[in-house]
Image (cartoon, rainbow, N blue to C red):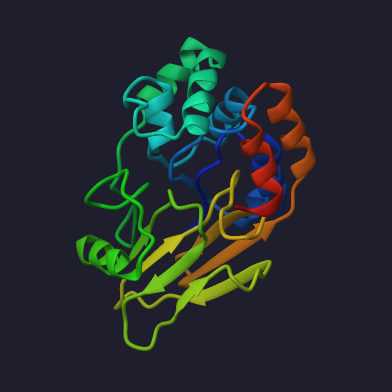
Length: 247
């Protein structure tokens, strides 16, 4: 079984389209989506429809998905995120809002090897940034391979002896890791629509359970087109300009 793993699309249709061109259906059997389909970007409805058309095996909700459909208060959001969430809520159809409202919370078990979260297994909205937090989350995992999003930083963290922390700092196009099921691995595929690790390219991952590998992938997309769409929608300038920097 091979899984295409995507997360944190944030309403960025050009980035999602680039990922789906780069990872063609012959490279995967099922799709896993780790949350935050919407928020920030200018094409939230189109993104939802593209995801629905993929018929993902699992989709878990993100905090922006909850905020947009009214399941979460906006007081914890900064002013730019709040404005984007309010705009997105006005833009989506009732059916699209209902789709977001019906998304399940993580963690969710996928099979005997995989489970998925948005934030962490203890709190779907928690950020796993520091290594101590990642180790604590790994101890709560119920499968050898745990997939999470939310931080917009691509990386893989192995709990076994001698396993390095692998991140996207080298800005490679593809990095393939061998996974031992005797260990526990936490893998963040990175953000499709708003990377924050210094690499503006859309990020995703491919999990191949037969080969016991995880491949971290990056693909360039038309950043200028999304920046122009954000500006045309009247969304905050920061949401456009940060895309070019991957921050």
